[in-house]
Length: 452
Image 1 (cartoon, helix red, strand yellow):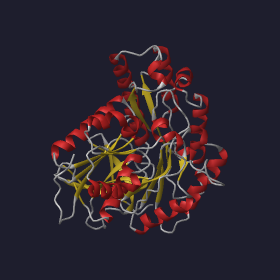
Image 2 (tube, helix red, strand yellow):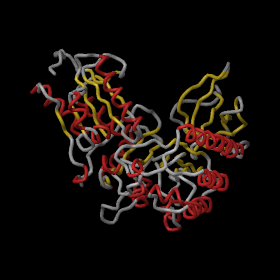
Image 3 (cartoon, helix red, strand yellow):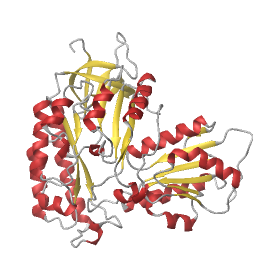
Image 4 (cartoon, helix red, strand yellow):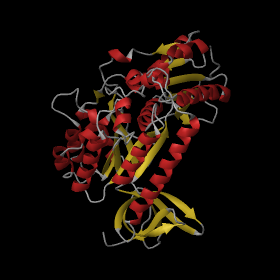
């Protein structure tokens, strides 16, 4: 287990994130932590002294990819120190320890202590796998990760909530993330204040179950923290991560619509447009409630971009049930549907249910939903042509012999903006853009306008 790591120079550390934006936030915070301790951060493909893989376990495929990336790190440098962290470690600690593919295992509560854990390893050089993994069912405190710089120059994802109490039948997350826990409001505000001071124009609030924010705190909830963040001087945009439809009420929206920095882009988790399937999934709403939430958003916001997730081919899903999902989605006309093929996750109730579908049936249903969302996405974007929208410029793109800046509107629609020498075109600027049409029939494009 002893690694031949040179001393007398800054140790090199490489990071890799698997899974969701919450994982990416945690990785960015760990990376920041090591920078502050004098580590040099290098690309994961380079030779490093320490490799940190922040793993995912949402599906069996995610487990396999996590194992592959841990082994790849070892191939990159056989003498390196390998750290596996996160959800897969939490779910399969014993297997990882037995295989000894990683030297250090960190679960979902000790990522904030990464630098100290590395110091301990370099001091003791243990000949066994060092495990920092707690029983998540007993965890009540929010991990004190904080982030002030991220690699992305315009948008910062800020995790304000962890854990989930929903226990959907297909999901392992409550078991590896524990019960709901919220970051203290004063810490949220301080973190975002610093990010805004450091030049980030857009803040995205994320969490494992964001709608639960504040339920473990006194006198605080999601709309309350949004009001506090909106009051930060210099805040540009505030974007929300995935929400549950039941949080969308008249009372919530009456307060939300007053916060001008909040983007009219709402990701409402659906998973199925069939009530029978939703019940098997143990989702806590009906299609009627979901439709009501969408209607309320359209009442308070003009043409909000409503996006969702749908699982195709869930256990026991009949052709009739899937058709109900198709019909429901065609009826409510969302901007974009993120389609996932149901994947069996060991340890969930769904794994033990009868009626698992053949892969070819699931794949065919995914394709049908992909075609549906492509059509609805195009219909939504076509309505934007001729309008003027504020775009946050992010990166330069060359398309043919024309130079564009790529950016996103407040409703999270990608737009290519013609580079104009007469205008100051640079990353991290919010500019008014008149949408002229589609480039190659795909991406919207436009030019700087004075009409905004």
